[in-house]
Image 1 (cartoon, rainbow, N blue to C red):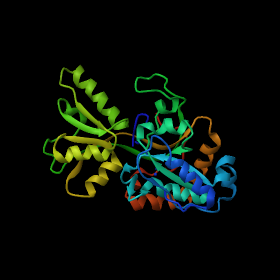
Image 2: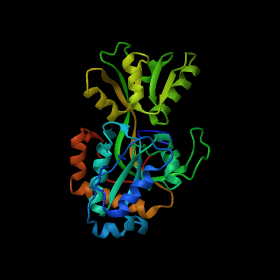
Image 3: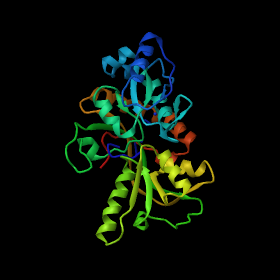
Length: 314
């Protein structure tokens, strides 16, 4: 998800089998976090890791678990099947876990609260389709004011925002410039939300009626509004919009992707050991093709990265 405190744009969200008492204890601690929504997902991690395992922080090596914050309502990136969190992000994390010799334990929460939760120690990292932006890196709010310590990103996918409309496009919407005076839905705190805020300002500057932006906690809620005809469009990340269009007969994607940018795995500033180990694990799964297989499984090959960057967003 591309979100401001941004799910990009976006952990990728993993399922792993618990290993012994330490893993059970870690899971209990995670499910007690205050800002989480119901449901958590695990995933199957590897037992090896070799030299990459040695590069992880000692606390994580000892626990054998990397705690991941995510907002599991962004199919196909991360979403819930029963109590389990599945999707592209968990699959990528699963492959990385095999290289690092640890398991990634995903816990569901509200997107715009993930960074705060990580910085207070509830998560080790965020994998939630989060767009890598300079504002997030520097801890700035939507007005450019310092609001936190910022985060570092390990970039793993490229995606832009897309416009989702009802099948047949009854309002003939192709661009955000056509949304002045109309009601449009999106997910709160995302890059797509910021695109609509900017367009609203432009509409007013041009003497037109502003866009009435309905921002929701999840993109699922935004799509419900679109399906009922209460809004003319839903602006969301391309992988999510494309999946919604392909999964049924209610919607279609129109126009071009906007503001393509990298999704990043977020870690707290100063946590360079974890950041660098994650980067090496991602490089390793790109090299052995398990990264490519995961993208093919979910139909998002067009978003593949050839090289792994830290803080490559703008």
